[in-house]
Length: 331
Image 1: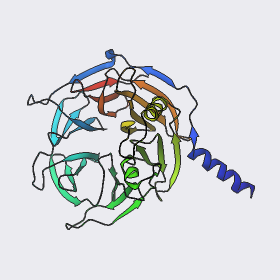
Image 2: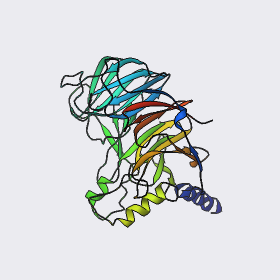
Image 3: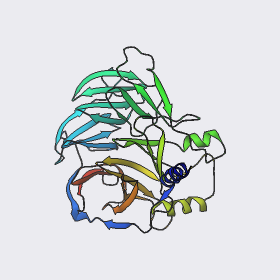
Image 4: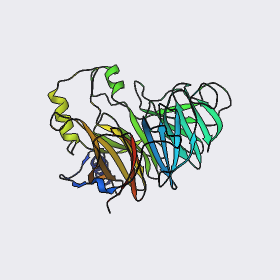
């Protein structure tokens, strides 16, 4: 009996663990920006970089207005682009997310309600999309892992390599966070970015102040890190409460997130009247032995839309300057 009690205490501690406050803060100066680019090789400018990924010396940047992904080397020199705007089978109509793995890029295209795969610049195949939201997803040899909100669940797994135009077999997981009275209100507040790791599937909600870890095999929730007492979440929650409650409106606390090695990084919004709206704080979370907050970085610019992380750089899209910046990570 005692053994079972201790196991329960350990699980509850992991599900509700709060990080000690305060957390180390590091302000990164503009001198740490080693490279900055604002346009493609054809002299057209970046406009809406909404998702980025770093993989083996390459930076991938999805421009949702151009409907393509720029593939850059680590010095931000253009190698090639993936996809182009159009309604053809090898074209993209409304791309909103992507994931690159083993030189193959899967693009979630809302316009065609499908996932389109490319090997380099070459189109490979299309999988029909049963459901999804415009957040980060990933895939492995057999399955896609997609954020997809229903009245009960928050993400799904879907088989790959289907041969027809019908939605492939898929299964829903995760529990909808019903912290509001109506189902429609809950649906608006449960989008999550998904990240793969050997220790599980990590989910970062856009509206909720926590991070989740799901078991890599069963996809059962194993751990939840509460961020509500950590800045800037604490101030954001207080600001939202001061503005009153509405079922149909909400504040987004997370703009983007990225997993590199054994660290999860969250690009946080800063709400509030003092200082104005900003998106330039990166929360760094260590994944083991349990999730815990390591530090908060303040990036040089004011508003960033997306980012990715290499062992030596933060690559981030500065929305005000419309530039992609290579910012050296502090040691």
